[in-house]
Length: 340
Length: 293
Image (tube, rainbow over all chains, first blue to last red; front, side, top):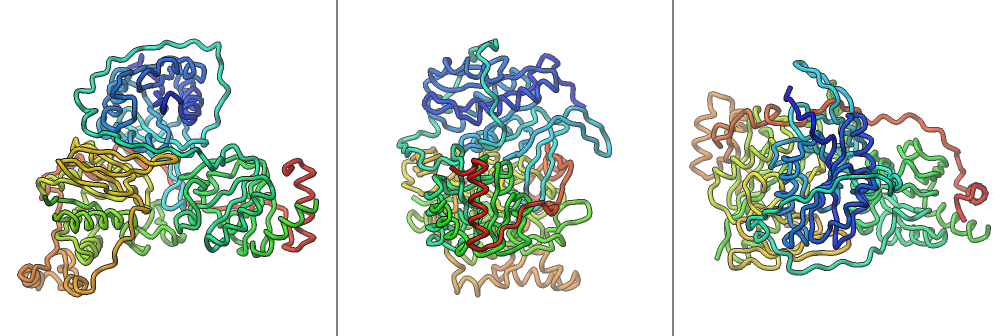
């Protein structure tokens, strides 16, 4: 087994920011990184590339970082792949972490594979859980590896992946999967300025136009979510889902099947490859409940499942099950709620 | 100006319809028990390449990697209008993770020679990792544009594309050669053309010929197909100059430690009758629990 630097970091988190605002997933990952690094008895680092971003470093410390690597350059103001990959790879080489975590945001999913390719190490996408544990194969035994747990094969299996021989062990995690622990303003951390040499790499790709709409769908903040799946049957069917959501003051969610078939926009998707939610009430209408979907909503306080198929997996995690046609049951819900 | 393009395409199991029969005893998925399809977003990538060819002129090669039956991807690509196709087929390249896959593909790209664009789907539906595209771009040391929805223009040695970002879009310009990953909303992939379908339905790789004709007759058959331009390219890792220690399982940093089939225990839940009374009771209970306002 490879010898690793004892002074190296336990876990390094990519601190993603856009226009000076930190991505929430980065703070969630710091919470998880803290837990993992404590098990390894090592430190947590955060890598913060950008332009004029040093004032974000204390936030990262308050959320669990022991050391923040600030890499500032005008060429890093807007995210582009190669300059960011160069900077992160350089910070990894210098700090020698056991584990590197990225949010599975569009930026993280663009960046992490490029860094893994550069460092010639393993990367596991969209993990739903991370643990420290052992691993043995025919030849060797390994202690304190990162167990990277993710659904695969359309959610039909759950795989635990390890990276035994290569360092760092890298993974991406979706926003909302790891709970965000409160900030602790009394935490003390070290801030290190990293020298940036973009070497012309910022010339390869130029962002020439950018449009960002106000976020219209707020699934994470909703206390009630009414979600539709393949059983909703079409865009028209989703009008009924919207009507119930409006009546209950909630947000509209959807399964991947409903999004992939074009019934509703991707921003409504709940699940491993969508948004992870924990509302007070989750009403699943015509959703079979593949593990990918359940991974994104199983922690809801009250789950109500409406499905014509009594064997649909969604019933296994529901608190209330209604075996019936959603086109009959949902209007009843709207009516009885309005009369309450 | 015409452009030389490579489209990466993967044959994937149709993950929407997996049953327990498809799992092997060691917990891995028995791909041969599942219907195999052209990865949907790779079809979007192929469509984008074909439309670039129609707009500017060019040459499109479909490159795939997989078991012998993945030759179907080569045929499907040619039937849709690709100019050439190649399949990397070698047991030593099997059981590869995304890094080893990207390495093997990079060697095959090298064998294909100079190119302007590599296009592939954002992700494959069996793994959903979206990693191979960026990792290949990394290996080739070329710029990448992920989540491409539209090609605006290719001019002056650069491609300008609109890409999806959270809650919006970006238009970015990347210097050629570049790698693009294409999302499903980019276009409507064309079906196979009737004429090309007739032309290529008898196209075969050498492995397929050996299986179908038997070893004795294989050489004659292969010669005949070759004369008619119907012999599909099939490359092993020696042929693409790959180091076998960087391919397949040997070249994969990640290992699968454990796989669990998702088995659901019957959960305990309260059964609500799909009647007005049942639903009214449910609403009352949720309001009393302060779950609903």
